[in-house]
Length: 115
Image (cartoon, rainbow, N blue to C red; front, side):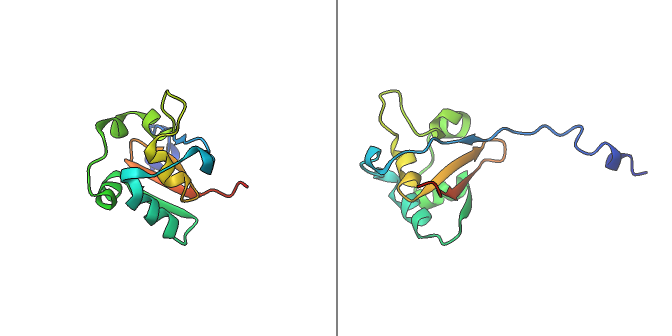
């Protein structure tokens, strides 16, 4: 009757999360169109803020680009020109790091405690 209890976790696949690299404030000149996300994360007292993609879109007032929903590299913070992306500056300047979970369609923004 309780066979499922003994094999718990054997059929579950663990989704790997991706942590955005830490950027310095000097690297991020502006948060651009992601200013509302920046303000929201900056003004939260909690050390951890979890937002779904939909909640992020509600804060921004527009849809995330299609790449944000399928490509982990969009959340990594840098483009190939060597400058950080505007979206990564939004959480970096708010003192947060971002860990995206694609299957769950959410992002964990933790307070950056490194000096």
